[in-house]
Amino acid sequence: MVDILLLQTVSIAIASVGVFAAAIYYVLQLKHQNRMRRTDLLVRISPWLSMSSSELQQACVRVLNLEYTDYDDFVKKFGQLHSEKPEQTAILAVANYFEAIGILAKRKLVDIDLVFDFWRGDIPEIWEKIKPVIEGTRKKSSQSILVNTEYLYNEMKKREQRQ
Image (cartoon, rainbow, N blue to C red; front, side, top):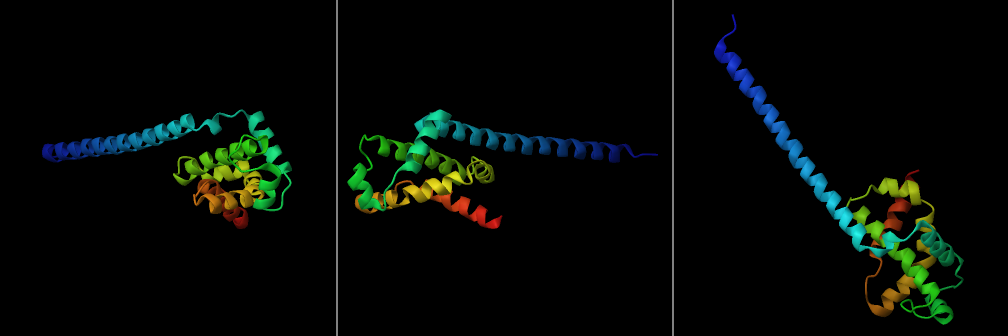
């Protein structure tokens, strides 16, 4: 015959495990919701992530079609980076778009492998094109601009080498 005390103890233990599992699930759900809110906030405050696909595509094409050899050549042909010319606007639009993606990836709010699958060729090509301009601007202004874009580029290169 089954001891009633043993049966009660086992049922209490099973109920306790259920409550504990539910509490862990709730904590994990809260963490997930917090990550989603942070991601949503970044997407909302970043105007570059609101660009349409055609606007982004046009900016990428414009950037990739720019012809210059280094920072000084760029400034001579197109002026300083932070002016209102279409070339600078295109560079800043594309770079800031990838800056926002880089922030999301660095904070693990978006899967870097997903970004790699989607942008694997484009991010390295664009970064290598704008790198002289960004590095020249960094030296001239003593600011660390677009570090997350560079981070994203480095992550793309790492994944490219693994394949």
